[in-house]
Image (cartoon, rainbow, N blue to C red; front, side, top):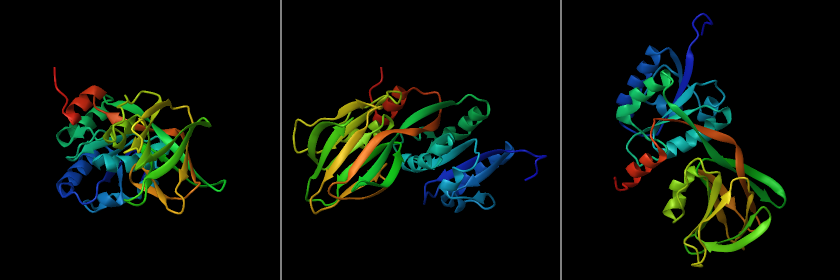
Amino acid sequence: MSSENPKKFAGIMSKPDKPELTQLVPGLLQWFQDHGYYIVIDRETAVYAKGPEVLTRKEMGDRALKFVVVLGGDGTLLAAARAVAKAGIPVLGINLGSLGFLTEVPLEEMYETLQGIEEGKCDVESRAMVHCEVMRAGTRVACYDALNDVVVGKSTIARLNHCDVYIDQAFVASYKADSLIVSTPTGSTAYSMAAGGPILMPSVSAFVITPVSAHSLTHRALVVRDSAQIEIVVKTGSEEAYLSIDGQVGMPMYDGDRVMCRKSEYAVKLLRIRKTFFEVLRTKLKWGQR
């Protein structure tokens, strides 16, 4: 690409196997071309487009992109966000028909929103992530960053998951439950909410620890400051548990493993249309209007 013709750079990531992308992607690429962008796409989008440079999502995070458009639902956005958060690349989520707390822009408002980005009229909202490290026999064996949640769950249907929880090295409780969720404010409207946890505004500096189907009726969701270190000690005996990151990636857990959770040094930048958090809740959760 010649330096005499500088371009803006952006990316497109898509949910796999969405038939509507056959018509949607070519039009979107044309809009970007008309507005002077050089576009890179992920392998999922490449099924519907010929010509643009194809990269893995991780490779997109290494490019100086102005922003990334995510076509799909919240799951696609979560994967995209983890890929580009370290680089600080903003993400625009276009909802293709699912519930979508994060992909709040409906398809019919996509071009209007893109034009708003061009004109500097779109808000950028920073969302905190949770960082976790898995310690096994005193050695760090894995680390992850999650936008929604870190979940330690059981690996079989029949048994309860046993965990000891510490906050800043102070013992909290021993939990017997199907799973234990450590949620960000963003993730408070996901699995944690389904398990009875509270909804937090995205700007609240906190994490939520939520047991799922706890054996004790006195175990309730616990809100802690996001400067705290949360330690989960897995008690499985001879059986396995499982660590899940945003419900998408993870690993088996064994007796004595420790999951150390704290606020990530990275944050996800979401490009948002000018709706309040409460407008989104009313729309998505069908809350009553005034």
